[in-house]
Image (cartoon, rainbow, N blue to C red; front, side):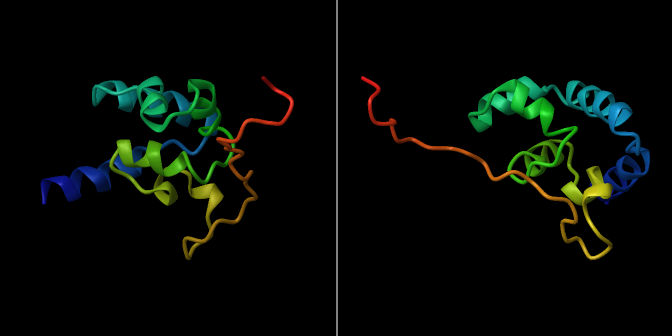
Length: 105
């Protein structure tokens, strides 16, 4: 019950302003002994990509950040979802490839 209560309290404190929310997320991660850089290393992405996901929609990294805070992406980034939980904003498809382009030796 304490976990459910703390999650409910945390969702009430999530700032709506994206710039303020970014600072809030970084502070909450620090409180939990985590950071954007640590999350990025664990996910195998650059820390710049992780930081950018806080300001622009990213299907892959939003759940990572939200999960680290004990929230859902819908709770952390409500402006990116409609009332049913469906994404309303366009996102970029991750461009990940393990293939070496031809001509590079």
